[in-house]
Image (cartoon, rainbow, N blue to C red; front, side, top):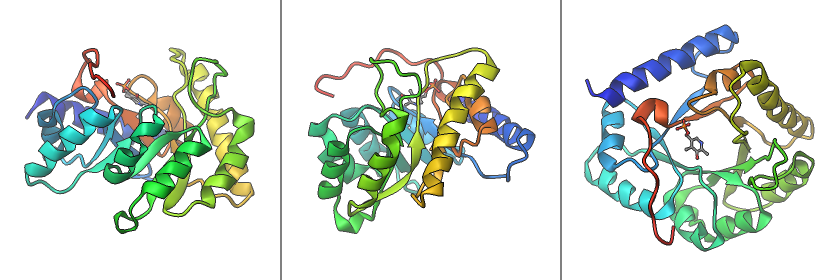
Length: 237
Ligand SMILES: *Cc1c(COP(=O)(O)O)cnc(C)c1O
């Protein structure tokens, strides 16, 4: 067994325990293996350990990796774009990804909608929410989420699938939960308005258990599966 495979088993076990502790339904949390900065061989190791869903942050790196993975004759992977979105990259993202987290400007959603080919099926999108109010971070402020959701629902070839957040790192599990609870409450408010909000994408290597306790349905885990990342080097990403 590879290290990746061992790590995956460990993360899956921790997810199962957190789901059980929260008295949630088995299988109600999807694990995205965040493979950014790691080579296609790492993705293939994970695929051989039955991982099918991957997250990438850098468009050019991701597209090259997807081609290598596809050439390896494995079951097709499902790719989530989880990085910051530059408007000059939306066409490539719309062509290659199945899901896009981190929508924080309507202009980006409009471009993805216009550029998605009908035969690729609807692109699943999540609105990124800035829960910390830090000016430097991406994401829309909580108050702006309902209006953004209504605008996205009106766009063809996109399917609004929920909310996503990357809160500032906190070590205290109670503090982690308090922040994730705010995203859950925002999702509940959308559902009360009959807006679609099936998924909560929250929780990373350091805090996914707290996120699951607050209702996360998608956790994005990188280093706990693939190990420590080197610094990303990509020109014109
Ligand atoms: C890199 C990244 C992750 C994974 O982070 P780890 O701490 O390595 O698990 C999750 N979500 C986003 C948006 C990321 O950029």
